[in-house]
Length: 401
Image (cartoon, rainbow, N blue to C red; front, top):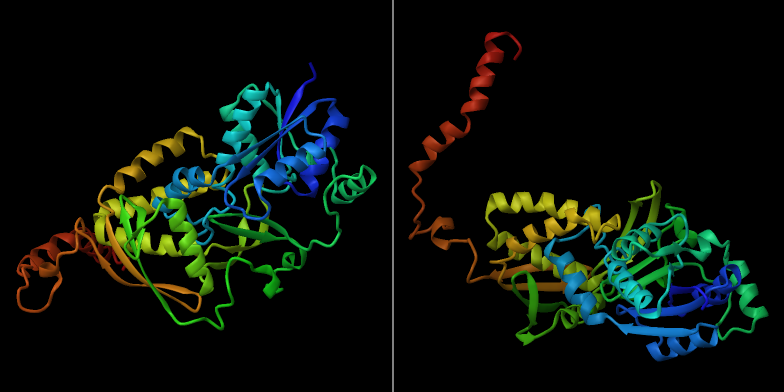
């Protein structure tokens, strides 16, 4: 029996050509695996049939949208995962679920190798291969674009020569990756970081310069997870989809940053994540109401480290798993409603309520009914400033002040 290679298959030109390319370069049979994480476009059966028509001996498709939303996007939401305070891990958080299905398929079909379509410059090669090595330590990894010299020009030539059922065109100015959590766009004229993005860059969001009337939405959370929108129960996937639609219509969630890639280079990236950014904004504000001060301060540190680990392809690492436990524990009381106004590119919190919150009106009010004992403040200030006061006295005595 020939060796078998499982290929992460998108249905596009490069991975369609890679089926035959891998076979010719290695002599192995190729099993194509397509994973739906809400990227839209063609239906899975069309993609599966194309893989078979391009020479795959098996084609496996998985509808992982609910799994992706519940088990990958929701932890990112609970962590308020924003890499460099901006990027909601659109691509990074999708790779582990794809890896999981690739490794499962490799075991199911007796493959010894897993292939992916990443280049040698990006983060995704690391995310795929570290994940594959972790879940399938005996599996080998290859990347046709990186390891087998599959350039775009060669892919077009190969597809035309072999009459593959795929549209071939040299004019594709952008590299795009998208799923239900958001959309990532790079390359082309965007590589000149002085160039502003043009309208054709965007797809998930409408132009916020000419918005429709403001849209008020109430998001209900339980343990940091959205469970209802405007009182209507939703699954995690439905919550993201609904907020993508409503926040996207207002142009919310457009991000343009120069990002520090794992491989050591800086890269200009355009992201659209209307649902993710609106939900993270709401979740952060509900945490402000419900999480104790010191716990909240430390969670910001944990959340940043969690985000860096996920960005760096360490989803399955021991440290990431340990941080998951802490983050999950902090969400115990993150319950309640956040009211937001979506308008002209902004998601603005206008109201919050929680039965498990720490906001006490009687302590906070300056009006009658104030239960805060202000006489405690003088002694607190004296003790709170004691160490600085003693250090300052030393400096003055030694003439250093």
